[in-house]
Image (tube, rainbow, N blue to C red; front, side, top):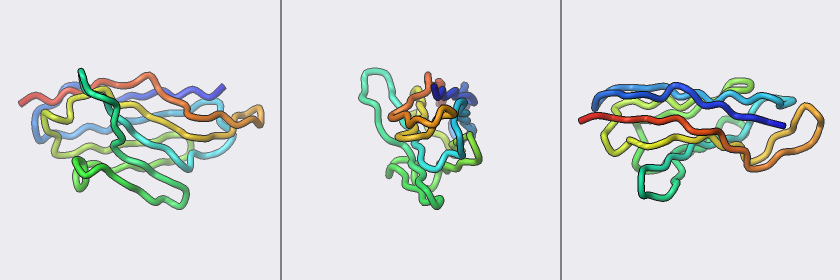
Length: 120
């Protein structure tokens, strides 16, 4: 079974930077498509950034120019710069479809989330 483990969250001041990582275990090949979501208290989970095969990236308007998604082998990253208090949320990694080491496909896999808090 594929598992995703996020790390890199923490407390940072406005204007600061953090780099989130999402490491996948139990996969047979490199990650090609993945996304980062976030959920603030009392709000719905929202898409932050997406990377697809070939390296295409898409970003929510509220992070464009500040966040960068990338992937390497079994890890997906989210570089977050110029952080704002409104970026405070739990950040989740998601992989829509991935092949496991047993040769099966696993769909819609989520990590446990990592807390990002931006102080004003």
